[in-house]
Image 1 (tube, rainbow, N blue to C red):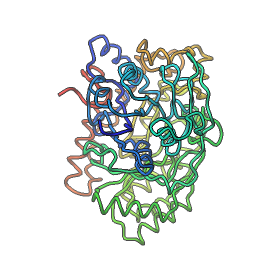
Image 2: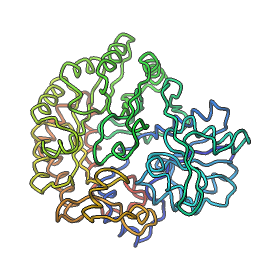
Image 3: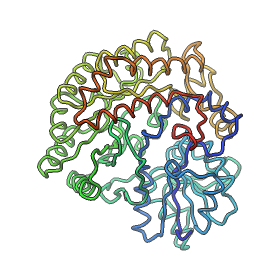
Image 4: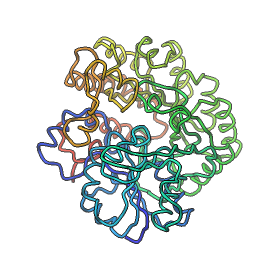
Amino acid sequence: MAADVVLINPPYVFPPVDGATLRMLADDPLVADLASQPFLYPPAGLLSIGGALQRAGFNAEGIDCNTTPMSMEQLAKRCEGAKVVGIQLLVANARSVYQLVKVMQGRGYEIVVGGPYPSVHPEIVAKLGLRYGISGEGERAFPQLCNAIVNGVGSPEDVDGIIVADGAERVRTRPPRLLEDLEHWPMEREFIRSPLYRQPFKGPIEVALTSRGCPFSCPFCYCSSASPNSMFNKSRWVPVDVAVRDLKLVVNRYRPRYIEFLDETFTVDRNYVRELSDAIVREGIRVEWGAKTRADLLDPDLLEVMARAGLVKIGFGLESGSFDLRKNMTKDFDNRHIRTLFDAANRLRVDPACTILFGHPDETLADMARSVEMVKDIHAAYVEFHIMVLIPGTKLFKRALQEKKVTEDVFDRFMRGECGYPEYAPGNLTPADMRRVHRNALREFYLRPRYVAEQARRARRPSDLLQYARAAQSIWNSAKVDLPIWRVGRAAPG
């Protein structure tokens, strides 16, 4: 390989997968929850870090294994000749990264992991048998580490955000340096490109980002396990003029039909969103776009401003149809406000979407049924139903430990392939109960004649009807745990 540095976005499972592994995956909530091929987004973090590497003078290459499937051996060989290989490490892909690292070691390149998992649990670097990891945002730290390894300039131990493994499970870390000047760290979209990136109801997509961080602390989210003022919970914004210039570049270069803003919570600063929307209109940028936010950070007036600027899809993390359960998650907006927003969105021809989580603490089967009834009643354009899974260090994980539903080492055992991904099933409910709830919710919501009729009315052009049909098939396939899939949530073997 000619590149000095390779960045990898790994899949959740590498091929090939034997029968025993497939049977184990059938009991893994990620199989039931992760969507199929039409839910595939570009790895925005790697695009930003890839751009930073190139601007720092490195010959760098990016590989997304979800669009370029290959075995671990093929991937390891492809990286030979590089000096540094960076791997994006989530909790959910820890099993595949663990396997990949074992195949990659000893091939002449330094393996470095970064991303959410090492940021909240730096010890994972030592557990993987690696020397270095990155905590926090990698745009500044990773090029500095590569400069030390590749060019011998500086010391890895002096890099802000570096994780250095000292022993079997011991690490030394330097506090990460938060990026405040986001205008200097844009995504380099050419670093990794694929026609397979798409959003289910909109088809092929481009992505944009105007802010980072979320100031809230939902008990199931990384934000509830991160230290204060971290990349997870410190909100920062790209200046409006820079964000608009980036949108123009995307529209002029790629002619997208749809752009998805990847901001964690798009309307944290309502004045910023108004200014951005007004600038999009003023600059004559004509493109359909979508974003996600919290219901208590939006009102019909702001929604109308966004719609005039091209908004066609808005997503909400509703999580439950029960006010009490939402309140326990720091989402204490009532159902009347939700209905008001969904009514306004449908009136403005903005598709209102949402997520529903099954498995809140103290949630009953009746509560879960109430959530399904609510999203039907408010005429959601589409709903992502998920089984509640755990993340290290979160408030929910600590509760699961207290209730003895999991053990401290559950994520290590998952990484080693000794158990499925840890989920949270409330009360006496079992994982099998949660699978049934998940699949029944999909059937109840998507297979209604009324829903089919509503989707037909939402169509802006004839091609939308075909896209809706493809999306429905994709969503339905995501619940088929008996499919012989080898990339969890992605595609069946050809």
